[in-house]
Amino acid sequence: MSTPQLDRLQTYCQRLRLYQVATELPTLLEQAAKQDRPYSDFVEDLLSREVQAKGAKHLTMRLAMARFPFQKTLEQFDFKFQPSIDVKVLRELATGRYLDHGENVLLLGPPGVGKTHLAVALGMTACEQGQRVLFTTAMGLIASLGKALADNRLDEKLKLLTQPQLLIIDEIGYIPIDRQGANLFFQLVSRRYERGAIILTSNQSLGAWGDVFGDPVIATAILDRLLHHSITVNIKGESYRLREKLKAGLVKPTRGSDPEAARKSAP
Image (tube, rainbow, N blue to C red):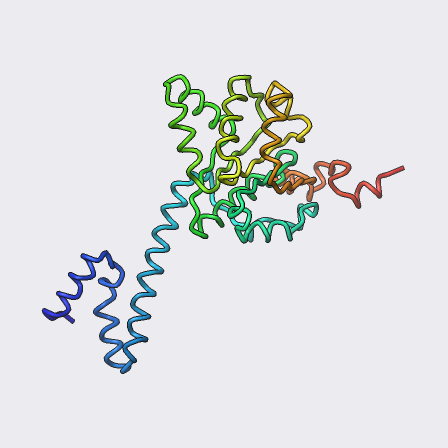
């Protein structure tokens, strides 16, 4: 179907950046004529397709800008393998209400229990809700802040890191942070305090953060701001990476990660 009027309509759509409408307009016009649909139904169908197309495009952009190391959802998380996690807490976090209040989320537990998976899943959910998200590792963050300081661009870098509604900082505690790094981390947390949410993952208990940051005073100041408005999820379980070996009986579960196994093995 091609007429001067259709050409004009498609030109108008292009100028208005209604690209999906322009693409589907000929087919939808033919269908509407055959079905004798009410004008309001036709317009609603037309505009809903444009909204969906733009939503999908914007989501793709937000996911790319977030720099996730991988894409995994909460539905893909095996909560049965980690029974210590309160699923209700994760479902509440998935609503995104914590973002509205600038609350922080701390995911704590030994390596391999799914902390990063959960952090990414919550980040992807936030992207789907229209929020801007940024993912970084702790060491990558410290390195970028250190470079900005050396280039006399620290304030500019801190401003950029306060813009996303959600900042995800992964793997705190795997490598000690020096005093300069601790001070830079504190400045970032202070900038985002009550302005934007942070999700952190750590293999260290909060009591050990004095060693992680090399200074108990700075660690206390950081935790004071992080914990003021926060939700903490402690994960006590086996590593997903060892799951197949556990099933095969090649390794034994650690006592405390499996209450039933611990009870049976107790003297």
